[in-house]
Length: 244
Length: 330
Image 1 (cartoon, one colour):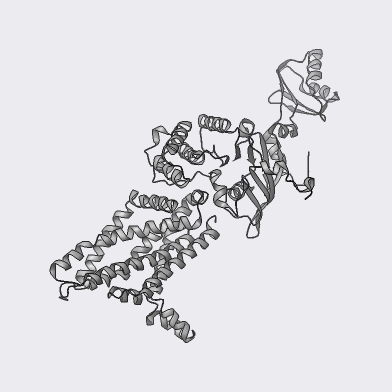
Image 2: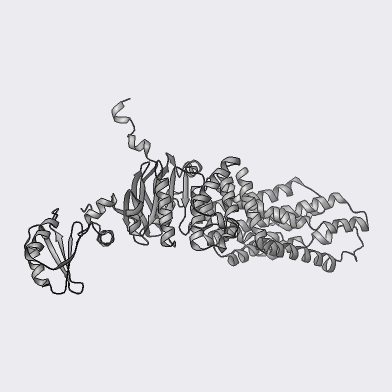
């Protein structure tokens, strides 16, 4: 565990050594505010909740999380430092988890910086703070899911831009798995139960129920499984491709 | 149990690096083809070969970065495939090109390496002070690595490799990109660390072999074509014990050459007409120096310089690595 934390700390420090961290946080907060107030109609709705804020998180993450994830492994492979990392006395899992947690923690910090909205809504009315806590948690879990997908794609590519684009596409498919946009593609030839399985993979559906305040164990478990599965895929991809 | 038949070979126990039949294929191309060797404590093994011969791939397999297609390797008795963490703890490794994290300072970078390698507290500070002094990194400790010169970056890579004072060191081209003074310092460092350790360095700088290595392995096309002491390699050279006479301009070069050819100790003679030099190659194991000296005195040849060669590594290297492999050649 100490090794995972050392790797995570090193990675996190790397974010702040370049403008990346600051650019990300500013854009994340800016866009979150913009969406909430202009597209979400925060004031016009006249309701004391943060639904207009959380509703746009999936779309925000769709582009911003891959931007964080794309460098996780692609950069190490390009600069050759992956050879250094992989010849230290650590396991693949420690390296994968360390890097993943660093990025997740970073997104968590960006998310935490949206606290003025929470204060605002409490100042203006009497929202159900339990729902808001659940929604924050759900949002973080969803970000973790996007991030784990990005981690795997980044491990498979030396080129960050390619990693970014492929990650956005896969995240988009996962997000909308329950919607006609994706389902129509499968409905012609996939048998019913499998079609239901594809539909149940939708990030949006799982996130929607959490953000309404229903912290169902199945939704939480779903995101944790998605994270676990994609991180496992990351270790496999790395093992195969680290030296290419 | 039969004691004599099954007791392990003492060399096998002591081997700090053991490679057996290491093979790596990339698609249809065989980069490394069944390489086997063992290295004992105190040895500095030079890994030589033309670019693309498989040096780096072999080192990557020893360090556990590339999985061999066949064969296996172990560090201090720990299989790099089955007990990778234990093996890597015993190993200090400088990858080709000395990669590191460019945005970090050497201080932060070495602290990170120390943490991951489990060095803590006073122990860590003692080791850090030691490598900073050995590699003279004191002045650049707080500068981002990417802003450092190539020489300093390589020294940071070396510092990382020796930070935990490992019993086994594998250095891929440790002096590449260094100036002559820095090369000298790195070789000095390798020599002072050598006792009790195993050090493997790869290089294509031949003088390095004579300067630091106690043993040299030459590989070509993925196979070992020579594995011996540097002195033994020199003996393979046709220049070994050859005598070169540098004469002044009044000398009759063809006459000198033909009288040298008549000596039984001399196998062949080469004339360099621009440099006014004649080189006599020994026939077999003969040492023609004395007879040539006597002959030169007797015939009153205008000799300005007389040179006995120990052998030329570059010529041995070329001969070995370009010849088609036909089994054992001596």
